[in-house]
Image (cartoon, rainbow over all chains, first blue to last red; front, side, top):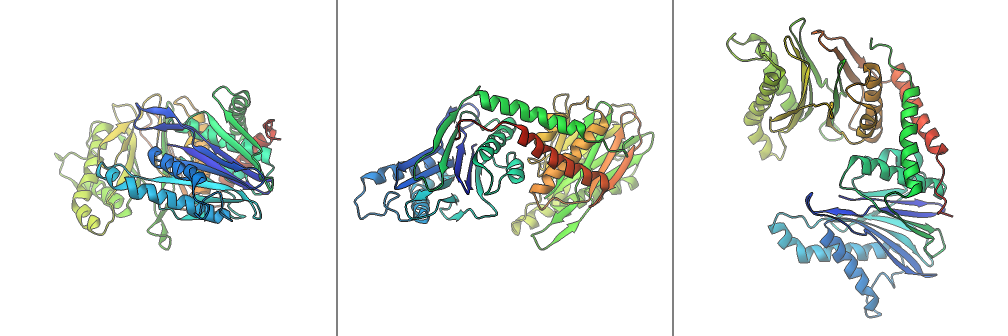
Length: 244
Length: 244
């Protein structure tokens, strides 16, 4: 399983992904699920992925190869808009599925993957897309400024309570980490380290990229104080009086 | 969808269920998902159900009819242990699936349902079981004193943080209601009213049975103060310093 979150704030975008993959319980590994395509002052594109690892790595490989493409070929490097980038990524996903899907299906394995792709291209606003396993995609809006991939339910309530497009980035990053804490606590197949990236709106450069490892002092403090705070709030609430 | 929780505490058992059912978004109704079989001083049995409503009502109907069964027939009324009661309920589930499953399957509808059944029979300790759609079942243990049905993920973190077998019943009831709040907030197919039942251990009588409706003063207070408390704790936590 996987957990990824990306938020489009007024001030910029936050991307975060866990790094645990597993094929059965006896084959657990650490893989990066965040890929950054960065050409400063022209475009910054961030890809988060979940699903079958061979499929998502295949997608990344197709996008990686595009730097050697002929100039007249449409690539993520010459696309004029993030919408076109999402289209290209969705098409890469379909290409891998056409190639590997039938053989995988024969063994009862689904060639399924979901992607989040976001960023900014010079001349356009920052944009964030969620690409479905079929290659079609949706974009965030004012009311729904974030997307999740993978094991999304445990960590969703805190995002819904806190995050709007106007949330300051530090607060949103804190909220994302608490969302990861809830998910990691409840699903053993989501694991550290957490990769985080901050993209400041209109900067056309990666702001901060951070790998948060097990034992990270800030994350450990957050987990402990959040858990303690929840229990304190819970303890302060009055008990029901009808249960004698 | 559905949300049900049952907890086996040292002091007794708490059962809770929502009451929304839907077949598509344009056919939403209120149905009781809690059924109580009560013969005071001899046995109290509580059934919670989720899944296809025709299947769960079929199961309830089979159990209801057992009060008219011949004395030598094994029923929930003459079973010597809650294990036997769970076996009978699982068998009732299989009977409905045998009868209705093939026709439903032809229309692409799954004859699937899950049950929680718990209670106490004179001469035995209180016991709580989770019956799978296939009719097999598991029982709570010291480390895992509760079961959920239906949309379980949103409301699970608070149960995991708070509930042990030693939790006082009022605190556990409060926790169950907060768990319902998180679930109702995140899944529109889980809805009020909430049916709750408290069974005091070794009493062989229903303790309290309560229907919590929309606008219930205690539940409204709990929702508001819990949400406010979460935001307060969140606000008190320091922001990450690496995100300038």
